Length: 221
Image 1 (cartoon, rainbow, N blue to C red):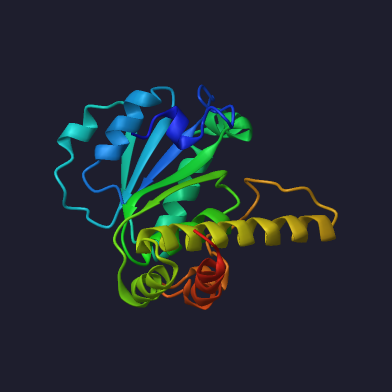
Image 2 (image 1 turned 180 degrees about the vertical axis):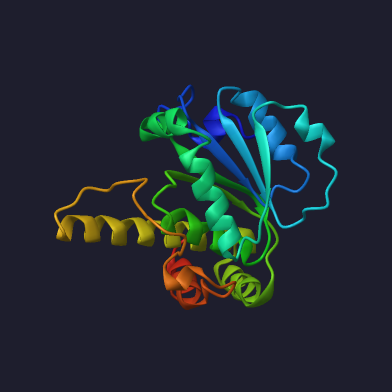
């Protein structure tokens, strides 16, 4: 269950945060979004999905849910996220100075999980990431299965550790960059729509996958 405890909202002081925006990435027909809309009735729930032909009448019954038809690997996803973070009017934009924007990915398959990590760390507007990866496919899946066999654990354990290592590396790099320039971490400051170059392709995570998988290989279970 993705309640406030599972999402880490209580620890972040966000369980009743004004201006909270939750992005249900690759939302499908909105099971997670609808649940979030009940758990966080004060929040704005934003569904993002590549299928624009879904019947979403059941979602329209919830007043705090909106849907955007986007390509997660393209500029449309970036533009939709930034649009929702800015809000519909000036009063909302003013409130956004103290709001929290969190991307949520539940059961993301294949390269969608690395892409969500890229979005979370590539967009200054995003304050938090909740990721629950799903199936293990492609080269990364094969790497995870081989590492899991060598370690005597499940491939999913290696997959989650890999993504955790990636997030920790991103945080460490961001903190090092901020301290070296004398700046504290900030949010809501990036202009334009483009992400860093490595974040613009479905294969964007390929260059760090191997390094982080090897880190997972060397860790005890």
